[in-house]
Length: 425
Ligand SMILES: [Zn+2]
Ligand SMILES: [Zn+2]
View: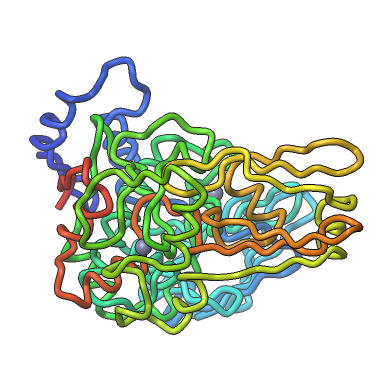
């Protein structure tokens, strides 16, 4: 086994997984592991590009690298200010001294405070055209503990562990796809990649969840799974092709979120969806009536959003003559919605554009249209859940953990065709 940094990649497991790997695929498990090795376990998260003078404070003595020089010895300061200079590089000022370099790195043993947030690892400052780009270079396992804080909060331990495995898998998958490589970092700190707000609020349980699942990921089809997750499915999860421009992804399947038999969910009519939304069957894991869940869960399990004529005109750009669901996926998600106005018929496709147009928590809804002689008076969206609905349902995982299920059982429930592998210790 090779040991790199704090990492010991389990080559035996890697070799075993590679047997399943199609040689022609760009992103095989071996490719994904190589990406991790090349980074020595460190991921780069962009915090943003800022102008003006940036202040960084350390909980103890700062260590500064300006260009090739590491400046620990002269630094007695616990704060440094950094700004751009006229020649396009950066200037760092601390303890009355000044350093100039195109890239400046700052770290401190117990973390750094930048823009009122605590960060572990190193902050890298780089002069770019728009200002100063700030990237947090942090060990993956430390980053995951922070992701737990931002993405699920103080859930029971086994739910935190399930979320840690899911986030680890998704991050490793994303690293290998290089979605932000050209921009000089691995991931952004927003919804596009994963919510990240630094280390403030990370609890011992969150650290423990990462430690006890260290190196464990979900794999399917010879790859580490892009194990996406969402807040609440409403009773049924979706598969990738229901909500995105995506073929079927091995390991991401639609499941009933409850103790019912695990047949693939299959709505065949609007009436079936309507009944399911109005009277959900007993035993749904993310149902807040039956389970101990945070109070915000009540807002989303079943929701109604009513838009009057004026609001519809504002959102659709013209008075609506009709609105129809053209395609609904077997998991209940609306795939195509037709809007008929005097200008013609506009088809809105995919869950996110539909949700954004009408500001809906999810794409799992039915329509109730109220008309009068003049046309449509209002449209009511009656729906379930929040988020895209694919992969782990966080609220379902939360209640499964409260009922005594372990993280393996939780993951087996949401990803029935994936398996767990430990890729490093
Ligand atoms: Zn991103
Ligand atoms: Zn659910």
